[in-house]
Amino acid sequence: MKRKKVLTKNDYSNFVNSHNNRTNVYTTVYDFEEFSETTAIDSSVVLNRIFLDFDAHDEKLEDAYSDVKLIMQMVKDEDLMHTLFFSGRGFHLFVEGERTTDIRNIQAYFRVVKEHLRNGGGGSSLDDRVGQATRLRRVPNTVNMASDDGQGNPLYCIPLFYEDVISMSLKEVIEMARSPRLIPFRKSGSKRVFFPEQPPIEMVEGEVSVPQHDGNLPILPCLYHATMVENPGHFARVYLVQWWRDILTNCTGVQLRGDQAKPIINKIIDEIHEVYGKSEDVWLDWNERESRKHVSYTVRNNRFSPSCKTLISNGYCVGKCWRFPNGKK
Image (cartoon, rainbow, N blue to C red; front, side):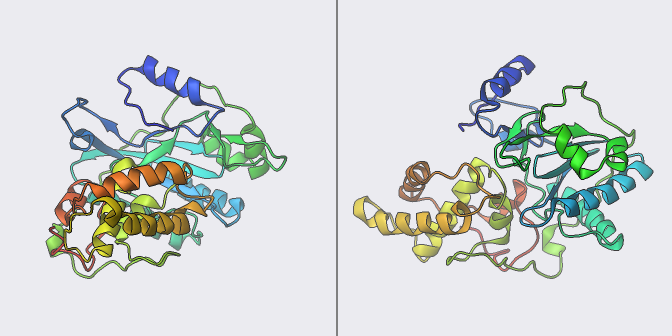
C-alpha cells in the first residue's frame, strides 16, 4: 500500500476508512511537527513515547498475553500514562514519556522494561526491534490481514485496558477482536516516563553482535532491526539495498549502468526474498515485482549506504557495532 502524508484528522480518517478491510493499515508510532516537500520528516519527529511490541511470532499467543500482563502491572503500579492494543497477533503497548532528543534514550528505557520482564519470569515475546523514529504501528480498529480467529476470519486491532487484561481470558480477547471496539479514545495513567540520558556513542564500551539470519549476505545490526518488522519504513528499505549494493561491489563506488547492474539487482532481490519474502511475520507487503522496481532504481542511483552518523541521528543505531566509527562513506 502506498504511503500517504496526511495533515488533518479528517484526511486521516478518510484514508483509514478507504483501506480498512481491504489491506493492512499502518501509521507512524511518533508524531511530527513539520511537513513540507523540502523538510525531512525525521527532522521534526516528536520522541515522547516508547512502543512495546509483544508478538507471538511462531510462539504461543498465550505467552505474549502473559508477558503483557506482567508489564501492564508495572505500568499500573507506577501510574504511567499508556495505551494498550491487541494487534490481532500480539499486543502493542505505548508508554508516554517526557520528550527526548535522542532515540537512544528510549532504547535505554526498553532495556529497563526487558529486565523487569526477565526478573518476573516473563518470556521472549517482547520484540527487541525497538527505537526507529520512522517505525510504523497498526491503526486501531483496523483488520489484521495476517491474523486468524481459528475459523479463517481475520481479527481487528482493538484497544484494551488494565481492567481487561486482569479479568479477561485470551479467548475472550480474541472473541472481542472479531469486530472493531468502537469506544472513545483515552490514555490511562498520569505520569510520563523520564527516558534515561545516554552518553555519546563514542563513549559506549562493547559492541552489539551481528544478528543471525537466513540470508547469505552480511547485514548491519541497525538495518536488521529496522527491516525485520511487519512493514519497514521506506528509508530502512533503501538503506538496506544501498548496503548490499556496497557489499556486492566491494565498496568501490563503481558506477553500475545497463547490464552491469543486473547481477547485483538479482542477488539483492534473491536475498530479500530469502530473508523477508518467505516470512509471514515481516515485510508483509512483499511483492517481488514492486521490490525489483525499487531495488533497480536504488542500485542504479549509485549512492553509498548511509554513514553511521546518519543512521545514529535518524534513530536506526541499536548500539556500537564493528562498523563504527569508520562507517563514513
